[in-house]
Length: 187
Image 1 (cartoon, rainbow, N blue to C red):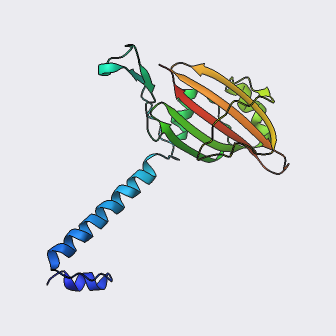
Image 2 (cartoon, rainbow, N blue to C red):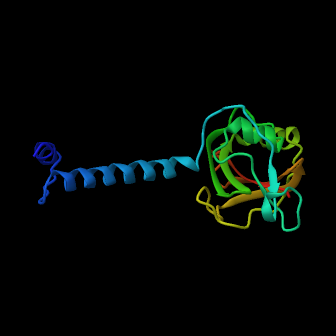
């Protein structure tokens, strides 16, 4: 058969003809493509500036109906999209930017900033961080809940976005401050 040589080259051995082998290879490639797409679809780390508005929909897809649930305008936003939508003044020291869409209406974001930039980040973003305030109560694939250090947190709204920010300054003086951000669409 025509596919027999290719199958042996891939280390595959099929009995029953080339068509069965071709079908199995096709299914394998399809599964590989789907898994790769899902793994990359919920995370982002680029800096594209496009920013659509958050939307709400209720039963029947009408905006503003009873039972409305808000959705964020993106599935894999960039750093600049999140900063613009949430009104964040991000310092140049931002590193390790990671985001994951937890639901259509919630995005979790994690990054680090220099300890020296925490006050400017708070003031420039108009967060009003309160020392000792823990505002992030749920686990995320992006952070551990019980990191040793000092905490400061705040929750506020900017347009159709609720932003919950918690800054953790680790006990190690050489470590940067960890920022946990939860961006939630408001119905």
